[in-house]
Length: 155
Image (cartoon, rainbow, N blue to C red; front, side):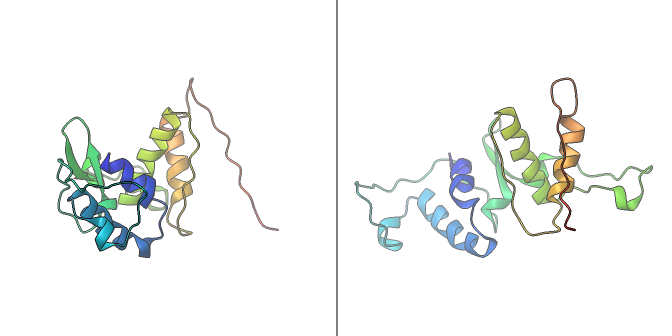
């Protein structure tokens, strides 16, 4: 539930707003009285209660994912094997996993499996398109899936 809240509510926030959301979120799951602390006016009675699964100490909850089998929080980079560059590829053709690409890949797979639309946003030049095309080529270009890539160019 916490993972869903982080991404359903906090995932749409700009980077500079995320620390404030994290503070609110951690207070909420710790059972703090968020109504008083953040001046939240609810139309129903809210009784603070701590969340039972402790979130791993991390400077950023957006860097964490929840492993449902183990019931623990992990850094996104702990969910993928350590990257070893292939010796047969040129440097400019390498796609090196980052916390953002691992996270985006997770959501891409999740939403494609659910047959749901997904919009990935972020600053230009952070590798969104490269990572999406890489994931599609690697996992979704087969007998079951196909895709079309349209490049828009400005003339």
